[in-house]
Every structure is written in structure tokens, then in C-alpha cells.
Amino acid sequence: MTDGRKKVAFICVHNSCRSQIAEALGKHLASDVFESYSAGTETKPQINQDAVRIMKKLYGIDMETNGQYSKLITDIPDVDIAISMGCNVGCPFIGRSFDDNWELDDPTGNDDVDFIKVIREIEERIIKLKNSL
Image (tube, rainbow, N blue to C red; front, side, top):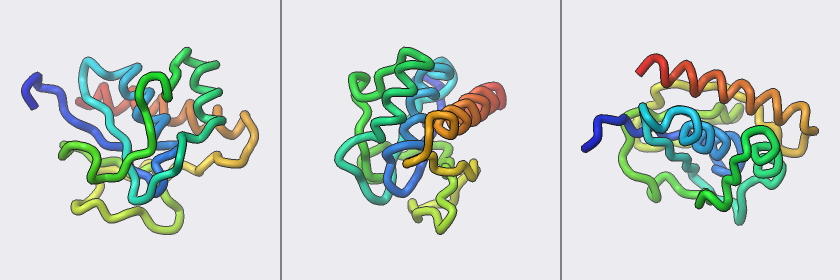
């Protein structure tokens, strides 16, 4: 940590939806306080396209153009804070315990209303995390 910001990782099994949203919102809303990363124990060929579309619509954030892609835990630097998105079946082991579990439902396959509900919850938690640091 050369600039004093903490490194925060948002972890989910596939790193394609909730964790990607959290990384994008962390960068968008809290980059002055912490660096945001996302990763999983498996990857998908691309980020969830509904998440990409809705994030673009709500915040003007193009996650793919901004360089986000599905990554493994080994692809990101060591972090100060690790947050599970809530895997419902069992969160991935990342070599250390999680600092928090946000227990968010995966909106994949659901309608835009469900996506927006989860995105707004992530936004609130990002702001809360920023304010706590």
C-alpha cells in the first residue's frame, strides 16, 4: 500500500455478476479510499451481460470497456479486506477468512427489477464500507 488506500476484493464463485458490480461501483464511488478488485474460484467467458447493460444504464459505467473481466483469485494482488458476495451454497476458500459476507442473492437469470435491487444494495454497502474506512 504505497498510497495509503486499502485493497478490497469482492469474491464470488464465478466472478461474473455481483462481484463485478461491486468492483465497478467500488472504483466509481470509493476509489479515493480503497482499490477495488473482484475474483472467483472459477471464471466465465464474459461478465454477465445483463449486469453490463444495467450498470451502463444506471451509472454510465461500461464494465467491459473499463477492463473488467472474469478473474481467478490468483489473478489479483493480496488484499487487505476480502468480502464474499454470498454464495448460498458455500463460498470459495481464498486462503484466508472473509472480513464480511454480504449474502446477496444472485440476480442472474432474473428480470431487471431484481438486478437493480441487488445493484442498489451493493451501492449502499460500498458507501458504508467507504465511510467506515
